[in-house]
Length: 77
Image (cartoon, rainbow, N blue to C red; front, side):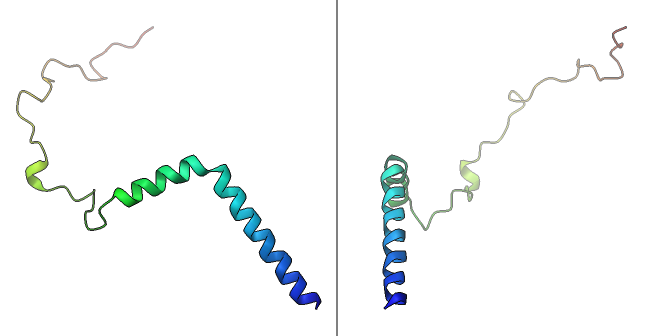
């Protein structure tokens, strides 16, 4: 009877620990479960179609022609 009682105590302790974690982290777990429910498993967010990726124009790029390199700048003495 000792092994059965030990198994019941261990199972009860695990159930109590699981419930304590569920109650302590309820707001976070609710948000996480809601976001998982809303997600589309067929869509990978890392796969972006080429049409959705903006292409830089010449206007978007900074003008670096007048910039200085580290060797052009005199060290502070």
